[in-house]
Image (cartoon, rainbow, N blue to C red; front, side, top):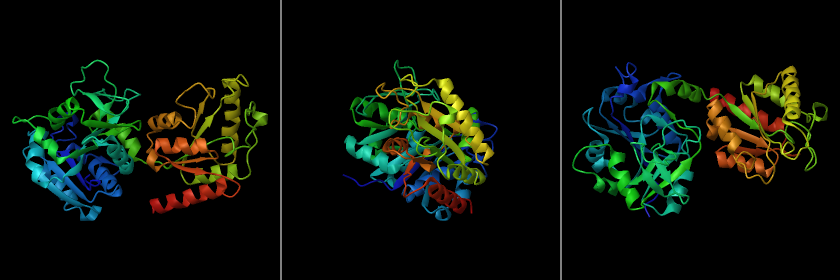
Length: 402
């Protein structure tokens, strides 16, 4: 089998008419967020995920992109260009670029950013045994319009760019691993590449999907720009389990049922203050099966959390959000850790990049949830205290800021 791809191909030639007047003088991929073009974030992501060669397929105002990126040296990659007419569709752009394509490459749309973890994508591709694979956003929140149906085994059963087929569930967002041989499926007439190729692969059962619950961010519509702006702010964020990390952990099957039963662990308030001083957003994520078991009510839990927040603030810290699972052990919910549902909900509501977020817990279920969501897990213990972990995170963030 061909080895893991090192070339990324980015379709970046369209006029971006939906984004006017922002695109009157620049391609949409060059719209800036926090002083940096959207496309630069994408290229840095690809570099950090091991891609050394990037081929940009341009059309509309290509000089704007070429002037900014040059040969890619300043960004740690090699960048080459294939330039066609602004009104050419993507099938034609791919045909023209065919001689420059590797046997296997990653294909992206220039207006989608998704925090790619290429190792995960590659493992899924190898395991599927299919020649081609797209990335699909699960779209549980109705963020965009569904365009696919994916079987339980990961095979794409329907690809419908018109979005009219009943039962569609999930959005194709590019980040596709493709062999160069898919170009043999292109028709004589020009059309959109994905519309020309993917339905044929579906018919042959040769298209797999990597399904992600992590939201992608876009410059495809004006309405999504504020969300993308918030995402690229990259506010440093940490998830904290509650019992056993911030407060004394009750025995198994017992719960902190009232504020007077909540007892801070030594150093926890100091750690929260240090996180606040360093500009971290702090989100608590906790299983609370005592609600389902009748040991307490949600009102009881809210009273406990009011005390937690108030005393954290009195000590100079801050709790920005609290997510809890009220379900029992055997209810099969998606939110009870080790399931990652609460983390994905927090991601959407706070525009987090989970691949840049640490989850500090004290139990293997915390670590499993973190890994399932793409976070970095750290488990505190008698040997590794919350204070030590926080000090390391704050030092790392200071280096990033510098």
